[in-house]
Image 1 (cartoon, rainbow, N blue to C red):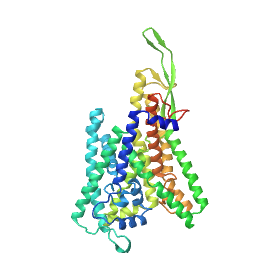
Image 2 (image 1 turned 90 degrees about the horizontal axis):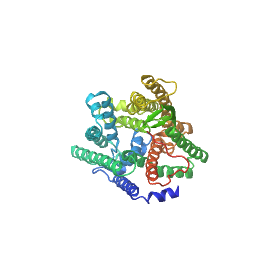
Image 3 (image 1 turned 30 degrees about the vertical axis):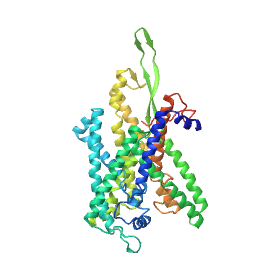
Image 4 (image 1 turned 135 degrees about the vertical axis):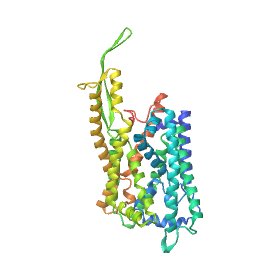
Length: 439
């Protein structure tokens, strides 16, 4: 492991990519501490302390504390993810977008441009709702969060927060193109990891004050380790479909029949369903700031623990199947196998092979989606069983969206680094075996 880290800095291109990614992530974290003009940060922080176990706490986790501080990056990267969801859904039903998606690199660039426009539009709407909501918030002792409310503050907040989201989007794209790993996923991961020191300090403080029993702290530690192992297993698990290649004659050489396999991932969509589900569930947070009583009441209803977790599970299941459907195409795979003389033993080539892939993928996707949903709501279950209260910071890493995203992104990034090492004849991080590709 130590030699692998040393080898990373022996490769100029890899070293440059890692340092570039780290530099931009540091710039992002510094921006999370720059406050939006016109906001009393102390009063807002006191408000979020009371709202830690609600959707406000969840949104603050994915913004890395930027929402709690009302910084210029308060909206985070979620508007971009929401725009991506909308564009992907429209691609499946709008012929024009579907045609663009099939045009290769040029079509993908056009779709990316539409996603950027959607990000700006969503950011403006969310920034307006947040600015109006901040004007109505009060801290301790009736201290107003916004000292001078009005349209001057709202316009300033809209411009500042929208520009912050666009800048984050640009940072993510730069990391993806010129750095290592997926930029957007790394930004979300860094936001979640930034909460770990707070969780550790809170646990130490509660142990010192007698509010947390040592045996409960030990149980939380064990559950965190077990849930991390479960996420790794769920992420790396595969169903291997045996494949046989027919005998081929190339020139004067005869290639005998060979047997291999096609790996189908148990969790084909990775952590994408979690990110998409959380992005959708943040809408009640913005509805809650609406002056409309009906919208506020609906947001309060959706914020209830049982209702929230029910929708959370449903959205995870939906996005697992949806993302698998748009990334895995059995008819295309079956046609390619037929062209190259490959077949599954006992299954006829063509449509029967495609139907077999559909049958297998539907079953393993169900298992993967249920496992993902169970791990996602595990912190709520642990909090209730241990009497720590829903949304406790101490249980947020014993499962949940944060742990799933952290493990998935780290595995992806390590796989990319290991690929660079192996390409240049260096040993990777593991002497036995290799990190499997997620897709």
